[in-house]
Image 1 (tube, rainbow over the protein chains, first blue to last red):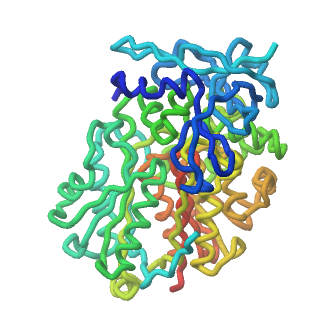
Image 2: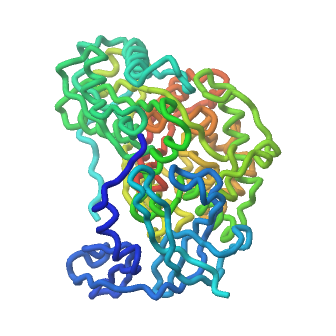
Length: 135
Length: 394
């Protein structure tokens, strides 16, 4: 069952994936990625605001994917990491522009904008953030 | 946070049945479900006419076989129309969820006999497609979109567990070795083959540090349990197995959003509720079937269910106390690793192993004097956790 999504599925995520926009709770100040309408702690006490992340962070944990899902065969082996952002929020992303074996926990990273993959039949090219080491 | 109330009346398991787990190229989803259902009805000594409702756990028949709406389909092929049929879905914990809903249905007083089952047909598509289907259990928008895989998500947990608690690569391998030792003794297991730590460490890397033999396999299979109100149960069997607790908790789908990626808070919470319902502690549990979809998952389960202190799951594995004959045997069935992991059926198969142990029917895998057993079924990387406690005594 190969899935091929229509354009709106990707288009409505552009701000989150291309500009790295998330949300911040106006009550407790916690940042979230992806954006949320309701703070899990304050529920509806606080109003959620949009926030743009700085894109600076560190490797919290990582792995090297050697058996890919559909659409990622051309990129193997690639690094998937949980990145701890300076705002305290964590995100999942690929780490690129280095040898997979050189990635370590605690490594300093900053965000870059890259192609993620393309849809097979429509040829739609999907982009998003990845992270690379601070040189 | 609201607490669970007591069940309004007691519920018992009176019959169990399952297919062998493996690659069943000659059997379709509905055929496997019928095989398991008939075996369970025969084991219970009831008739199909007695069954008032069926509940079937299934993760993704649509992705795996193109077929949704498995609830009514299975009621039809089991010859049970027009009774109500429900499908439960919570990724790899879909089966335990069926068990839980069945228990609640009987405890409510509406029904006396409910068949709960699970089925997954996973080998009708090719490997990468199956990987994609299983990816649906994680947060699509923020994990799968970026190329994460299921082994990859558990690898992130393993890497951090090893970093924080000095859990060793060998300790992870020992989980697979132990579960294959147990599965070797289980006639329904997919892989009845003993392996060594060396075999695990020499198997191909899937997502560092997890290798092929750290991963549960792709499996076809179905499993069914017949539930009855405890008052009715004694009429059908001399060895009913009683439900002492049914507990469930939820957490974020995305691993990165969790408080701590080395702890499944949903498991901790479901276990806390289960122990509270049953008025028991981890020391009272004689054996448990835990969700070892990857070796690291069993290490985390030891800690999250209270069998080991936080960070000491690897040491508990190494101590040998979780092997057959140890203080707390874990996954006597072979676990997901060796018995196989047809995702929707797994939660029910775990119940079946504990029922067999408590009836004294586990053959060479029998835990001596088994009185109380636990099952632990996880959906995704821990967004859903379901814990059941079963006992020989009401």
